[in-house]
Structures are given as C-alpha cells and as structure tokens.
Amino acid sequence: MKRASIFILALSFSMVTLQTPPVQAQDKRAALLEGRCSGCHPTSLTESKQKTPKQWQATVSRMINKGARLTDEEKKVLVDYLSETYKP
Ligand code: HEC
Image (cartoon, rainbow, N blue to C red; front, top):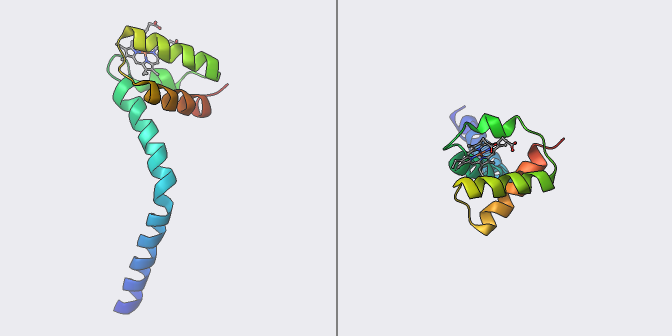
C-alpha cells in the first residue's frame, strides 16, 4: 500500500516535471506583463483589449514613451505574447 502511494507520488512528480517547460515560458511572459505593465493601471486594462500585432506594437511603444521599462528583447517577447493572447 505504502509502496503504491510512493509510486503514484513519483509518477505525478515526473508528470509535473514534463509539463514544466511550456508552462514556465508562458508564466515568464505573463510575469513580464504583470511586472512591467501594472504599475500605472491594472493589467485588466490590457487584457480587456484585442489588437493586431501591429496595434500591440504601437501600444507597447506608447507605454514605453510613458515610462514602461522594457528592453528591446523584452518588448519583442511581450508584443508576441499580447498578439497571441489578446487578438481580435
Ligand atoms: C508609466 C505608466 C504606464 C505604464 C508603465 C504602462 N502604461 Fe499603459 N497606460 C498608461 C496611461 C496613462 C494610459 C491611458 C492613456 C492612454 O491610453 O494613452 C494607459 C493605457 C493603456 C491601454 C489602453 C489604451 C490602448 O491603447 O489600448 C493599454 C492597452 C495599455 N495601457 C497597455 C499597457 C502595457 C501592455 C504596458 C506594459 C508594456 C503598459 N500599459 C504600461 C500608463 C502606463
């Protein structure tokens, strides 16, 4: 009985490990939105919009002009994430 539950525990751990990479990548991008875009307004403002990649690009550039802090690389990652997640 004990052995069986240890086996099940080990199995569920390995399943979590297998699932980790894509989840982490998604989390990282969500964390970027949360971390850099929630200082001035709630992220729900962003999440309620639906824009094309071009429009997200323009919005994020506008936010950077207002004071959002993103490196070029982070900007690209975030624009991709927003375009995939909040599209028309
Ligand atoms: C320095 C403050 C500040 C930061 C940081 C900031 N914003 Fe904004 N944001 C504003 C202000 C002020 C407005 C309302 C005025 C406007 O739309 O220009 C706004 C409006 C918006 C809107 C609604 C208007 C539209 O164009 O759709 C969206 C979406 C948005 N921000 C997304 C973001 C995203 C994504 C980030 C992170 C990259 C971000 N904001 C970071 C200040 C900020």
